[in-house]
Image (tube, rainbow, N blue to C red; front, side):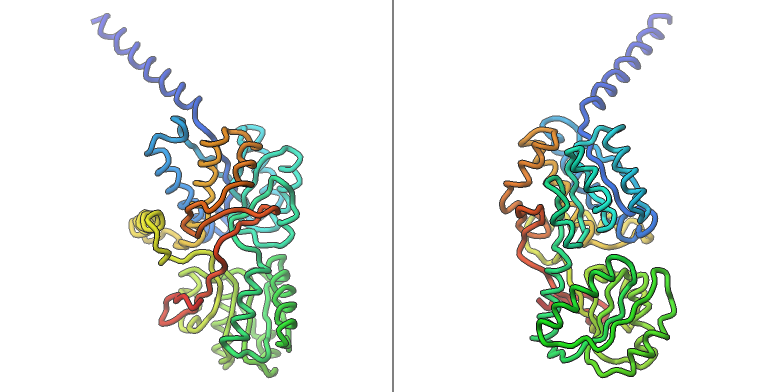
Length: 374
């Protein structure tokens, strides 16, 4: 009996030792996402990372080592994002961070990452300032300037827009879009007849919309986050504003249509992802993503953010496999990778760390669904 007991203890110790040894060989990657504030974007981004990690580990990991992602919540705060970064680097010893998701947080983290020589890849920070944020800073989406160029040109060429009204979110993202889109509208000879703002969290836009309604225009542009932009277009329609509407890529989410209802019909916005992209890797990704969404009706659904982080995770894994687990190795890979087979396109990075792919997709809401128009 005593021998059996000792054998059991020995087996337990061996199993524990084996698990410890395996853990010691894990490759840790950090992720700073919107997991509380803005979780309707951040949780899909997390799912994208998880799908990639599961696929990579199912094939044996990275050179035989398991890929592990350590998640931190930015809480939509630059200060919190910096604290999360410092924890991931100093405690968890991560050499690469996926995130943060918001431009202000990326620009807060970037100087520290540059000092530490740690790679940071934001999936959807669109500020043009990120292009000059440093040699270790990369992004997986197009800049808001490229999005502005594509949307305003479409407004002129296809929608025959002659005058614009703008209702923007009075925070860095909305203000930046207001400035960039105004510049492109002016270059195209389309005057902005009025520009009004709202605050994050607002639900009553009647004062601004009353002023807008008095102007002559044929397109209303509403940049910001969908928690405000969707109620804003809904109230605009209720107040009799029938002109065409346009937003930015944050509106590319089923939640926007849910919040705006019928007011979403005809709404034009841009996207970083085309679900119909006909490649084997995209078909597999889509199937796994929708399996997750279908299994939990409460799961926030935004496949675009999942697709971008899925691509960034696979790029990081490929970098580590080919160049080793160091920030400089990962950086050298990202600087030279060409035509990576991503679900958001064939990917590479320019000298500023901005992703290169085939361009910006434009979508319009038709009968309650997003339909690609360009």
